[in-house]
Length: 66
Image (cartoon, rainbow, N blue to C red; front, top):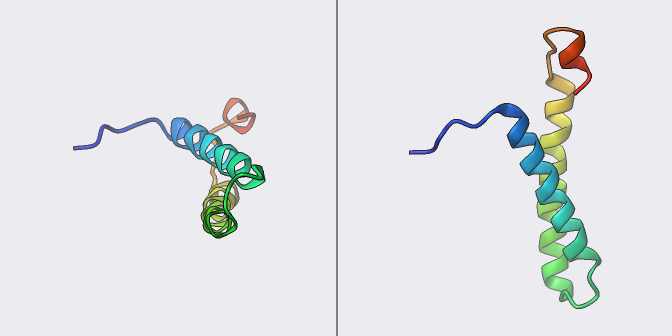
């Protein structure tokens, strides 16, 4: 069974994953078909992040900063 992780950790993991995908896509040694699949995955993760940002509720000034 999966352990519950803090919400902020999920966002950090998402950011790390998108940065890794961008690096792989930019690598000239990555074959074009794999780049295409990585770009699709990156787009999906970016949509998840955008939805999170749009639907995020804050609990006060401290939460609004990060």
